[in-house]
Length: 207
Image (cartoon, rainbow, N blue to C red; front, side, top):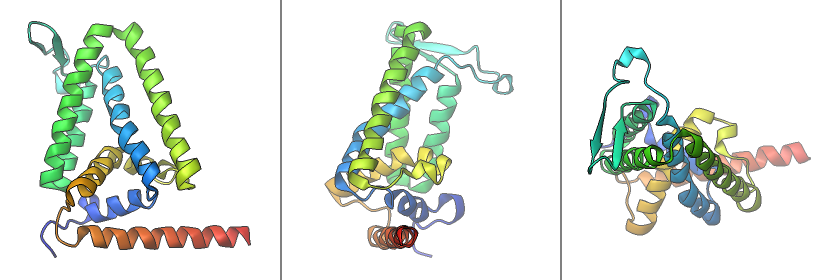
């Protein structure tokens, strides 16, 4: 087994190839790069107001930074950001660490925005951001990709892999990054095979 290769839940090749098969059009990819992380950010924003269950016994703990300009609360948003971060690091140490940093920054940033807006205004902001970002992504799939989003086939995998997928796409495009030698070529082959299989099945349904 080559260095960096994982299996099962941590099989990055499998996850990336699955998501990549639904995002092969460059314009659709660009749309997702633009909109996926704002979806994650706004989700953390509204989760700021959801306390952790008693099991964690942290719901009353909070601390302030920069003279009360940022209020960080141990809430469900923190737990989600932590779980995403741990999963991304387990997939690939380098890119995963960067993704974890972005998750942490999203949690801190969303905590600041939420503490300033309050629940009555925050949910409206979140609703607008979610509608705009999801609409943009569905347009990307319908107009440019011409394939239904990955979430219709695997909801959990699509939601979890989305932020990491667009980050890897940016790292690959700008710096030629790959988690380990041969990753990009292997994933490309799997993506092409998946797309060919999908096109063949679609053609059979038409005929």
